[in-house]
Image (cartoon, rainbow, N blue to C red; front, side):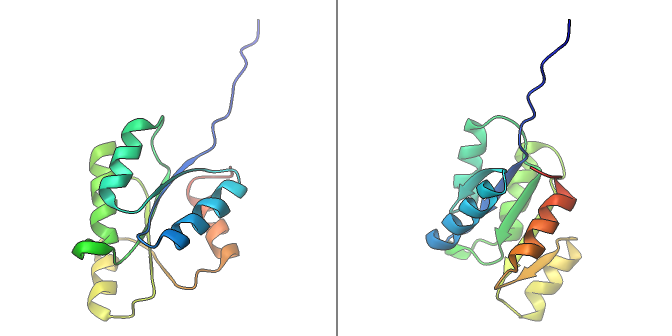
Length: 131
């Protein structure tokens, strides 16, 4: 008797407060075969995670979110709920040294906008594996 295994695509959490950018990430990642939680805030990401199956393999977050929140906060909150050190990546158009130094001190890689699709796909495959 053989067991049938169903491979589940890796789950990516994207936190981005610009709806059109968020939709773009979601469509792109899903076209590559990944499952996506597309959230406009950390609270939204946590709510959707609570309703989903599995833990994320990566959190991609915009550095500056609405209401004074940051991508570093969103990554920390998702990690805390998951109970594991989920890899996180920040995306930003910001070049302010203070914010970039804070992200570097936390060990979070930074992608600068506009993000190159090929570079992003390579990052996903290295971090969570192929979809």
